[in-house]
Image 1 (cartoon, rainbow over the protein chains, first blue to last red):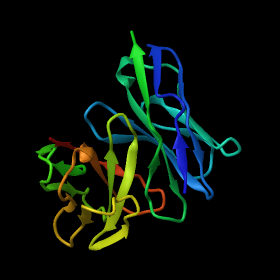
Image 2 (image 1 turned 180 degrees about the horizontal axis):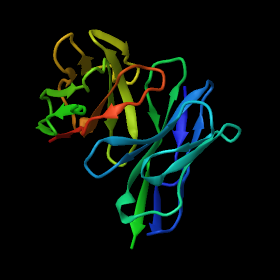
Image 3 (image 1 turned 90 degrees about the horizontal axis):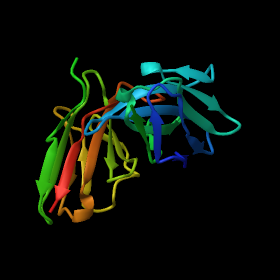
Length: 114
Length: 114
């Protein structure tokens, strides 16, 4: 079984500042890693995913994440945030060579202030 | 190409009634997943289905909950004799295959049990 921990439940940041949302996971097998964004009263939208290869993954809306196997982390970063980035962000994993079911972290609410 | 569709978007039931949630996957997708999001929490996996088959239901409560994905028509998540603790947002996702492929999420059904 795997688990995902998002250490920060809320992250307030000023517009145009950089941001990092932290994600750590625990699993006895190899995993795929994902970041999803959820806007109020909407479903989830995929930001980026790591399946294999380069550990630095670039996604939509200027976000990127780096897979660190030794630290079992997959932190999400953006160099300059906009008001429109205000949303809930979820880190998720799924087991390789198994069903595609996602295990989610508890979410981080990013609040961008003007 | 329409996205994942869920209906109804909002559902109100009284304790003891039945709730039926519907999910139409994206065209060409044969893998369907149901997740539940309790207030202020992340999403929790419930069940994974392919056409006419339940692949993994390890996240489903043992009683009152059932799911199906018939050969024709949408996937149905059925909750019998609802209780207040069933109040949550229920999300459906679909993917074209397993093994790390992106899951596309619907907008969710928000169930309120009075």
